[in-house]
Length: 342
Image (cartoon, rainbow, N blue to C red; front, side):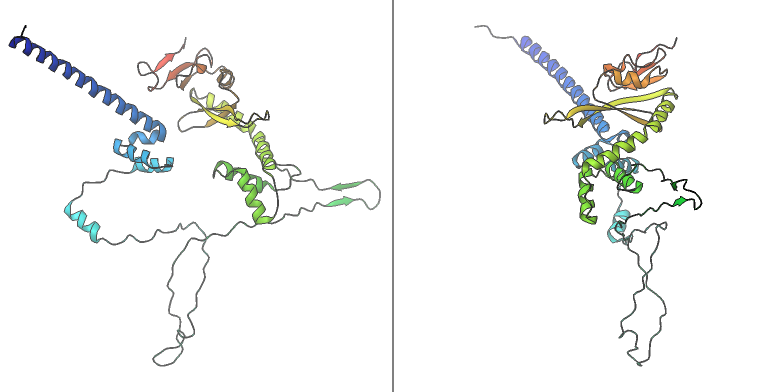
């Protein structure tokens, strides 16, 4: 039987210590990398404003369901709270309530006077009539429900008394939906409610039937949206030309489900290609697919800097003088992946 010497045991223990030390250092580096990856994911989720937030704030936001961009922006711009002191703690404990929020002065005011009761109009001491010496005033935010009405347009018809040259009528004003049942304001309200208030058209249709008794189908409202969108195509084209003339464009694409008429029971996976620049205009280019023809057609002979993620569809887009720049999340070793300014 061979027994290990003390020197052999000490050497093995030293090697074990060195191995465990290396493993601990490797684990710490991996934890730091995962924490940074988690932070980048939270920053991507909540937008650029979240880059100013601490790790604790980001974790709190992630635990809150339905956090809006306005809430993230407000949290990012809020100054850090000073450390509590005994004096400030005492003030908070016994401080006065700040009072109710003041309503904006820009809102119109409707005054309503509440008269005293008959018992209050007579002095209880001497029995004589009391007089008004002032008013106690308070304000509440009120709302007037939407009022639906029918606009009757009467166009003049004219004819000559002396001859039978025909009858002429005053021309109709231009409208978004020619010969439509609703006015331009109704169409605009439907668009604002859908895209700004995220109110689906089928709900708007149900609300209109409930409030007015007028039945307008969702398909009809879809026609309003499509026709209004077609009217804005020249504006979108001019915005795109202006955007490409600046020399710097950021691009990305996001999937959107689209209903088709093939009755497969599933939505088609379409894409909205977003082109814009910080603080400038933004153009959304709808495509039924994610192929290269989308950015190739939109960018055309663009010469400048195009910043995107690592999707290969952007590689061959743009003109000869275009530089393709990538974000650090996808290309940390090199921000610029291709370019030719010769």
